Image 1 (cartoon, rainbow, N blue to C red):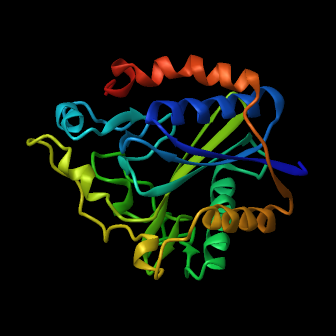
Image 2 (image 1 turned 30 degrees about the vertical axis):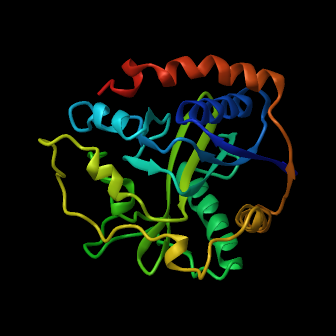
Image 3 (image 1 turned 135 degrees about the horizontal axis):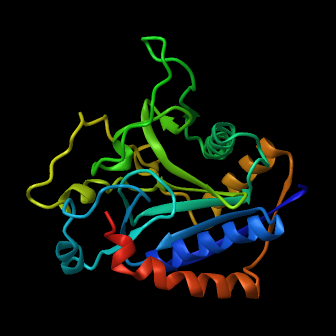
Length: 268
C-alpha cells in the first residue's frame, strides 16, 4: 500500500454517513482500496452500536421532537451523539496493519499524533494488564454513552476520552470510525433515554473536547490536515485527496434503505 485515499465530506444525515462508510468497506473487500474519510452530521444524530440494546432504553419520539436523527452503526460500541464533532473513518483490507487490536492501536496513534500538531496533549491509553494482572475487557454495550469510559488504546487527554472509536471486520475488510469532539455534548445521550432506563454500571469521568483544550476551534481544514499528517507519519504512506467512485455511490444508495429501516435501528 503506497497511498491512502482521502475523502472529506460536508454534513450528511446519519443514514447517509453510515451507508457511505459501509460502501467504503465493500471497496476495501472487493478491490483492496484503503480510504481515510472525514465527515460531519446534519441534523444532529444519536447512533447506537451494532449490538447495543437500545429498544426500550431510548425514546424515538423525544429525538424526533428535538429534530435529532437516530441510526444504528455497522460497528460496535455504545451510544454517541453526533453534532459538534469531526468524524473519521478508515476502511482497509483486513490484516493491512496487523491484528484487530494492532490496527485499532495504530489508527488511534495516528489520530493522537495529528492532534498533537495542534498543541493538544493527546496520547493513547496503554494496552496491557490492569491492577489485578488481567487485561481490561471492553464493557458490555449498555445504554450509557460511549465517552464515559476510556478503554485501552483510545485517544485521551488527562485521562478523559477525546476520540471515541469502534471497529467492524467482515468479508476480509475492516471499518473503523469514531468521533473527535469539538464540543462535548454527550449529555444529550442521557436526555434521550426512556424514563425507566438507567445505567447498569458506574459512570466514568466523561469525555473531553477540543473546546476544553484549545483557545479556539481549529478553522476550516486545519484539523483534517493535521490528522492526515499523523496518518502519513504513522503508516509511512501518502494520503491523497480522492472521490467516491460510481460503484461506491451506487453501493451507498443501496445501503441507505437498511440504515433507514426502524427494524435495523431498533432491532434490539
